[in-house]
Image (cartoon, rainbow, N blue to C red; front, side, top):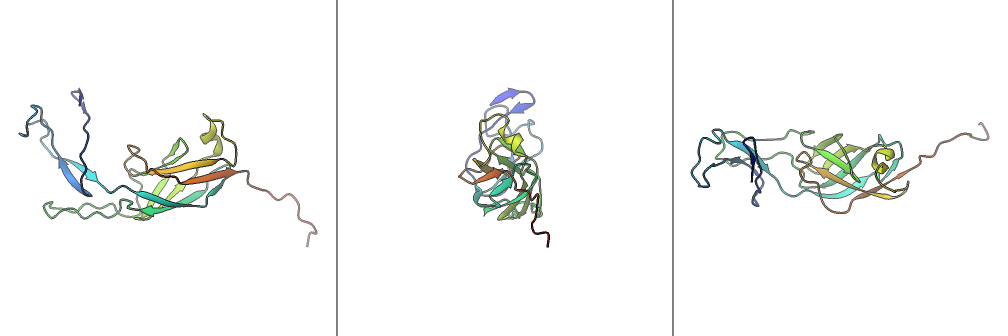
Length: 173
């Protein structure tokens, strides 16, 4: 869809995991024109699946690293032999990785392996600013590997609680 001379949106077809060249034509034909003199590279990857979040209880002040395990996280990608170079995302990496807690999106996301991501949980007040949730409510957790264009689906949840504090130990010894 043509928006302006600087913006075009396209719907990509299903495609195996690999890096492909994207070219544009300005005359609705298969003949490429000067619209895209250099290939734009588009990375397709398998749909990531989340399996587990640990810990699944977070203190209300947040700032706790959580580990999300799953499968098909983009990591090292071997590109087809027709390309002169291989494309890889060296592990660990942060490029394009975002975590979502409820509706709150955080940029503190690190892809550690092809099956593990670490995120820093935001404070409870950031999550509840636009909702009626109470401490102890379950919050959905999702991850994006493409800068927020698409987040994982499925039901992975954690809860925020008031962290207990110790005010007195008796007897003192």
